[in-house]
Length: 328
Image (tube, rainbow, N blue to C red; front, side):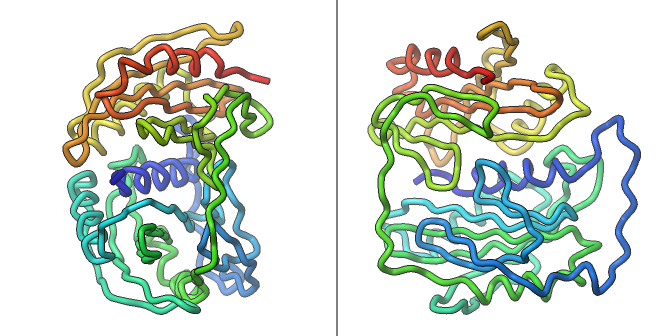
C-alpha cells in the first residue's frame, strides 16, 4: 500500500505554503472574525466515487483535488487502492505514520460521523506549521476516512487555529454532505504522450501509465513508479533557495530521506533544479527525482521515480521524462 499520509502531508504543506507570505513580503494581518467570513452558499464537487459540497467562494487548486479560501482553510480529497485492509486497520496505520512523520502532531478528538449515505471514521488533530516550512503557527485538521471496499477515500479539512472556532460550523457542514457513489466505475486513462499542465508547461508521459483523476499524476501499473506535477506560488524564492527549503522539509517529513544527488540541467534553454533522494516507507525503498522549474516566481515541481528495485531498469525512462519537462 502506498503511504497515504506522505501524499496528504505533501499536499497540505504545499497548499498552506502558498497562503503564507514569502520571506521578502510584509506580514499579513490576521483577519478579524466576522459573520461575513462564513460561507452560506455551497457547490457540489466530485472526485472519483466521492461527492461533497464546499463553499461557493472556495477555489480549486490546479492539478489537485484541493479547494481553498485563501484564509488558511482547505478541503483535500485523495483515493487509494488498499485491498486487504479494513477501514480501522487502514486508519490505524495512517495515524501511526502521521505521528512518525510529523513529530508535533497531536490528536484532539476522534470518532465516527455520518454524511449523506456513508459513515466515516475521523480524527481531529493539530500540528506545528514549522514542520512544513512556515516561520510559525499551527493548523487544526480533520482527517476523514471512507471505506469503499478495496478503495479508501481520505478527506482532509483544515483550518488555521485563529479561524477554527469561526469556521468549524462550515467544516462540519462539509462533512455532512459527503456521499459515496456505489455505482462509480473507474475509467483508466493510460494513453501516453505530451501532457499540458496549467497551460504553462508540458511533460511526456510513457504509454500505459494511468492518470489519477483530478491530479496531474500518472502511475505505472507494473512497477508503481509515478510522475506527479504540482504548481506552487513561491515568488519570494529563487530556484536555489526553493530547492534548499524543499530539501529541508523533505528531511523533516521523512526522517529516512537521504539526498544522493543535487544538480542543475538545461532543458530547452531553461535551467531546472534537480534533487535525487532515497527513503524507506513501510519497508519499501523509494528513489525519487524532484525537478523544479521557476517561471516568474511560480514553481512547477515534477516528481518522478518509484520503488528502488525497479529504478535502475527505468533510469533511461525517468531521464527522458525529465528532458521532456518544458515551458510551452
